[in-house]
Image (cartoon, rainbow, N blue to C red; front, side, top):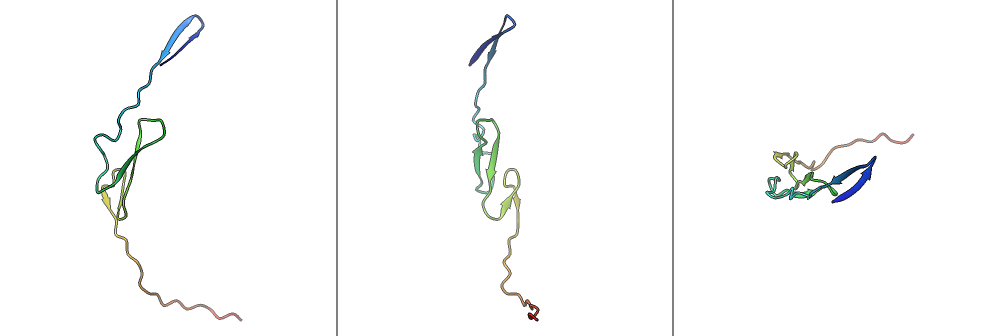
Length: 74
């Protein structure tokens, strides 16, 4: 709680940090993290998921081999 006086008026500022990750909003094994000293949060999604709450599934594919032809220096 902060108090200060300005122009003969007395002000009180009160702020409260809320438990933003309880209940955990993240899905599919995502990890909820508080953003700095705020009441906002961010989900860190595991591989294969994305979205605000890791609710969307993405398909990750790895190319096995490619046939690239490079121009010869000349």
